[in-house]
Image (spheres, each protein chain N blue to C red):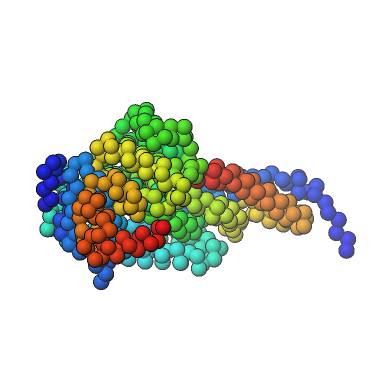
Length: 221
Length: 264
C-alpha cells in the first residue's frame, strides 16, 4: 500500500469545488422555494377539497415518492424535450425536476401540519368572526409552521444533498466538480474527502440556522 | 315565549332546534329565550346536549331543523325553514356578534395575550393597531392581567389563560357571551378568579348563556337555569326553583342528587 495523501492538486482546482458548492446552494434554494409554494398551495387545497382533488394530489405525491430522483432527472432532461417542443439548459431542467420533487415531499409535511392544528384554535378563530381566509392566514398557518419546523428542516437538508444528482446531467455543481477533479488528477480519496467535508459543513450550517429558527418559534409556543 | 313581567326584549330566540349526529339525536326540539341583560345557565348530565346547543348558537355546529335568532336575525341559515346555509362571509359577520369562551381556552399560541385580543379587533372590526392595543389593554386590566399583555399563552397559568379568553371574547363587544364549561379544565384553586370575572361582567349587564357544573355559581349568578336531559329542555326556571331539593321533576332530582353526592 503506497498511497500517500496529497491534497495539493485538490487545492489547485479548488475553484471547481467552491463554484460547485455555490451552484449547489443556488439549485437547492430555488428548487426549495418553488417546492414550498407548490407544497403549501396543494396542502391547503388538499385539506379543504373534495375527494377528486384529494385523489389527484395524493397520486402526485405517491408518484414522486416512489420514483428515484435520478430517473426523474433523466426523464425531464432527456425524455421531455423529445416529446414536447421544449428547450432548456441542464440547470433549468434540474431545478424544474427538484422543484416538483420537493413539492411532493413538502405537501406531505405541510398537510400533516395543517391537520395537526387543534380544532379548538380554529373554533376560536371562527368565534371571533374571522373569515375562512383570515383563519388560514392568522391561525392555521402560523400554528402549522410551528408544528412542522423540525420536519421541514430535515426535508430542506435532504433536498440540498439531492442536488448532487444534477451531476448526472453535467450540471457543474459540487459533486460534478469533484468528479471533474478526480478524472483530471486521479486523487480520488482526497477529492471525495474534501467534497464530503464541504457537504457536511454546509449541512451543519443549515441545520444550525434552522434550529435557531425552531428555537425562536418553540419559545413562542 | 316566556313573558316575565320585567322582561327585556328577547335577544336570543332558540326555537324547536333539533340535531342528530347520525342516528344519535343530540338536540330534540330545544326552545329557549334569553333576554337582553339576562344570564341563563344550562345544566344537565354530560351528553345531554348542552355544549352542542351552545355551539349551534354561533353556528360552530349546524342544526337539522328549527331556528336560532339573535336580535331577530336568523343565525346559520338564510331564512328559517330553508336549509340554505349562509355564505361563509356572512357567517363570520354573524359570529362576530357572539362571543365564545371555551373549556380548553383555545388561545392562539403564537400570539401574546394582547395579540389574542387584538386579532379580532383589527381583522374583523377593522380597528387600527394602536386603538386595538388600547382596547386590549383595557380588557386585560378588567380581568386583572394588565401586567401580562406581552406574555404568550404558554407563559400563563390556566386561570390566566381563561381570563385572556374572556377578554378576547368581550373586547369584540358581542351582543351575547357564550361560556362553555369555562372552569372545567382548571385546577380547583383557579376556578374562583375566573368566576369572579364572569360575575363582574354579569353585573355590567352582559347577556350570557353559559354551560357550567359550578352549581353554587349558577345559583348565585343566573337569572334563570335551564335543565337539559337527553337532548331536550326538561325544566326552566329561576335558580331557587330549579335547584330546590324537593323538585318534582324526577330527572332533575336524580341529577342534583348525583351531583351533590359526587361533590361532597
